Amino acid sequence: MTRPLIELLVGRDTSPTARELVTRVRRWCMLRASDRALGPVAARLATSARAPGLPAAMHDRATPLAVVVARDETVSNELRDRAELLITDDPARVDDFGPRTLLAPAYTVDAERHLAIAPFLRERWRHRLRFPSPFTVVLGFPSPTPLRPETEATALALASAAAVRGNATLVALALGTPVVTDAATAALLGATDGHDVLVASASNAAEVAGGLAADMVEAARLGCEARALVEREHDVGPVARTMLTRLGVALVAPDVPLGSLQLRLDELHTPFDASPVRRAVAACEALTSAAVA
Amino acid sequence: MDIAVCGAQVVFTRGGAELLMEQLVERLAAAGHRAELIRLPGAWDRERVFDAALAWRFVPVDADLVIATNFPSYFVRHPRKIVWLPHQHRIAYDAADTPWSDFGLDDQSLDAQRLLADWDTRALSEAERIFTISGVVSERLARYNGVASQPLYHPPPLYDELHPGPFGNYVFCATRLERNKRPELLVESLAHVQAPVRAVVAGRGSRRDNLIRRARELGVGDRVELPGFVDDDELVERFANALAVVYTPHEEDYGYVTLQAFRAGKPVITTADSGGVLEWVEDGVTGLVTDGTPAGIAKAIDRLATDHELVERLGAAARERVSTLSWAPVVARLTGA
Image (cartoon, each protein chain N blue to C red):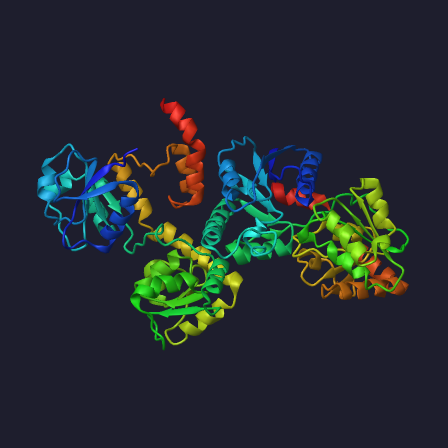
């Protein structure tokens, strides 16, 4: 089956929320940039209220339109009336935009791109890669051995525990890393000390992480809660799904013909390229072919 | 209430999990509920391990309450799902890398383990309450999945029939003859035992021929008896007349053998890595905990064979240790009564 085609209207000032949203939408839909000659599209998504292609797109009233509105952007009355969806991460604008608003998390991460890895499995990976174990990562706090940015996500995926603040914190939480952070970061992300993360000062965060690394049961519990927090509060996936549904775009998982099967796989947050998906598709293939015939 | 007990079926195999499910259904019925057992076959190899889990997601279960037991039956969907877990899919967790697991450190194994751990955590977290059959299983669930649970101990099969008897001249074990139960340890230990003691290992399994061959190689063929499957009456008498029970599995979840031995007033000789057995066997109190070597097990057998005061004292403490086990509180907690 062909995936729905979405026309992407990209502005220079695309926000991080819009970028995450586009990444997730790409899993279900084909995205094409606005400067290409396109035929009919299922919907349009503008990553900014100042996206260059937006004025022209507003005239095509037959195609549903969603616009990601950055906090500093103004929205004209014409756009407010025309767009099916105005996506914002600013709760204060919900009343202003009315029922066409879709509220996105202010701090987002693509939970499907950063899969949860339980502590025992991290240990097995470290064993395979001949990493030291336990292995603690320090990011955003003073550290004698700072990591290069391109290695951060890998290090967090292998870590027994991490002392982390700043941009990498959400990635750490999504990966199910047992996290020690500071009070400000915890508050910003809605994390509770002792439940989703451990809170420590800058001077002892690394030490607390070291202690956590040695306690596998507590590390597993915190990692599990960290992941749950991300899925509940910060994952851009539900926003993307809601957006597509409200635009009238049917979600089609790649190569999975049965809707109920897809629902069951989604309930378990199964990556679309995981082996159970391939096996389920193969098992159903004959049945669905017959049904089509 | 109408209660559906869900469990995985391991075709052509019967062990502790099957007994647990059947007993549970019986006890629920005895408590006035309508209870039925629903089973789906599963496959345990790495390639097919997810198939039955996914199948459970589609099984329509019309009941007031569902009690899911072993992997992957807890993938069943129901608004009132209770889990009473005998064990996880252990070859993907603590038993990975063992000879009886096909999960290693290759990409495919690690990917499958990641997904399985994630699925397990999600399916278990749907439950209204999570119980396990032992502290060992609860500890594993916390360590591997970050999921909290409560151990809920139940009496073993034949609890009411088992009784003490004279301390005879054989050590006994009733177990599946499979690698993870390590029946070879008992046979090999016999070569080191000085006292005139025999070993009786009841049960069926793929290791039977190996046990016979090993006993012959070690020159103890005439001191090892492998009666195969024994019926309940014979089992009760075998327990009652034994000197002691030797049970040395690798990281057991619960171990009915231990509890049945205790009920029969017999001390249990085990090893330091026997898992749930150690929740019951306290060294020098209800049995003897060895280093797991044949020589170490032999030393423990000799000790009990030559010290009647010790074997009687340990046997009495063992019987006392299981005297409070009962199905009533188990049924009450599972049904929320």
